Length: 213
Image (cartoon, rainbow, N blue to C red; front, side):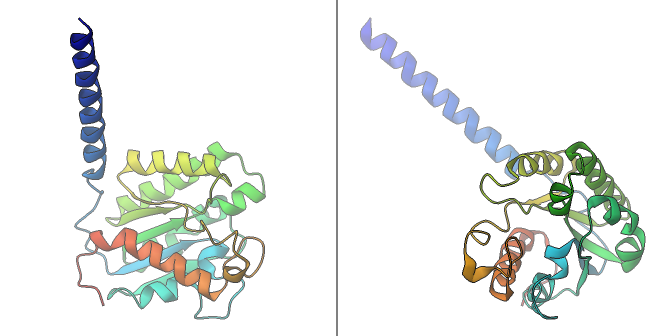
């Protein structure tokens, strides 16, 4: 009897483990909307982290990213923007620029300026809807780090799954706690932005049709 119970427990463990593996595999294989995008440009669309606050021109993450990919990269970051301002300039700064892939990086200023998180998510979802409606791929860039802005990370991950977007989590992880990688309390320095670019490139690389440098 004891052996039978033990066998049942072991079988249950294998079934649970198998189900978990299946669900993970299913998530990994999730198709990204507009995988066959016909656009030309990678557009980095966001706030001061995209703009490159705290460093000289050319030391921002979009510039570093442009050296890692054969596609043109446009920096459409604006210092101080919340998702509210970002949504307002989406057409001129993104949709009219022949986007192939758009990296959407908002939430930091929303958090600082106390924009309700539901409104932030609604704005980002609308950005993604319009980007995908224009035929481009969307990638959601998360600027949380550890427990800092963790709720945003969870909500953005869910939004990415629901919309068929690439999700790039915690790009500032390990940077915000390292004085040698940042220019102030929450912005990277040149070295930090290179790390952000590397993380972004690693995430989007499988979805780029064109050969990489």
